[in-house]
Length: 367
Figure 1 (cartoon, rainbow, N blue to C red):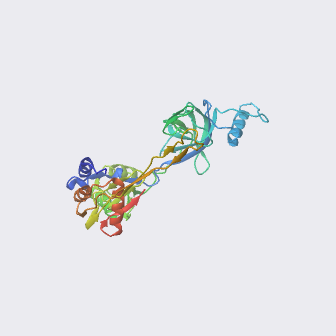
Figure 2 (figure 1 turned 90 degrees about the vertical axis):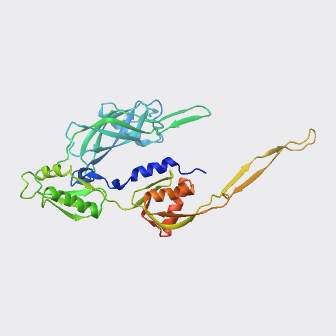
Figure 3 (figure 1 turned 45 degrees about the vertical axis):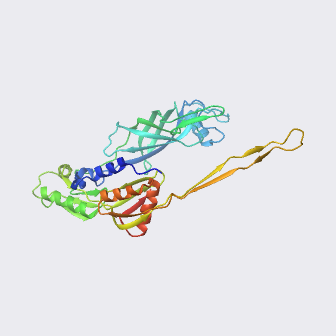
């Protein structure tokens, strides 16, 4: 049985520490400024130069139509001809344009195969436009793609690592259109908390008012409005710039995050468990198949048959002991769970059962 290691306990205790659990954090690291956001772009294009790993034309008619349209724009007419190339792949292109991006600046793009291409390794993206949801072109992407995975195969075996049908082009798109921001003329700005919380929003407003009296007010757990007071000579941009370096204590609700796919459990320092008794038993059933071949004697005109042989072993964990867990702090909680010696996946089941019993004073988020 895999047990929660001592290193896991030490790591958890190091995260919690002593009273420094609620460390001071800069305001700029926990809020977003109103209207200052990224813009998502999407496009469609062709990756050429593949070594026979592109789309099969018969299975991906949109690839053939795209090739014909591209060649016609270049003065080459191939209508009515049958193409058999597998060196081209139709791809979707996605990118995120940072706020205040200027014309001529470069951004990274992600390229993903749309058809039945097996690999984009060694390919080059032909110039493609990237549009936002408003239909306007904001960037143009082009360049050689970089694939992080690889795939090799022979007649009877194959090996692969990562995904070969997804690639990235660092700085592969040039911004052609800017998103206008009218921040200088604004009389006030709103700070949006990345993790809404009443206590944190109140502390942000008090920290700002402590430095600039009357400049901030909390609107709701997710929003703090900042407005220059009569005593502040600068603009709202200058105020937000100076406010960003102020430090506050960030509060957060007690939460347990569970990823069932990887068996990962993460708990923050505010998780508590009221006294509860837990009995955990590991039931293991092992079924082993060892078929034997029954060969008839020579000249007996018998038939060779396969005789099944099955072994079934049951291990109930030699019984389950009852343990009392009282997590008045994360240190006590982790220590108590560590004494059970359960695997991470069993720990997920135990935490969910404790929550159902009403003893876990935290929110469970399953990913």
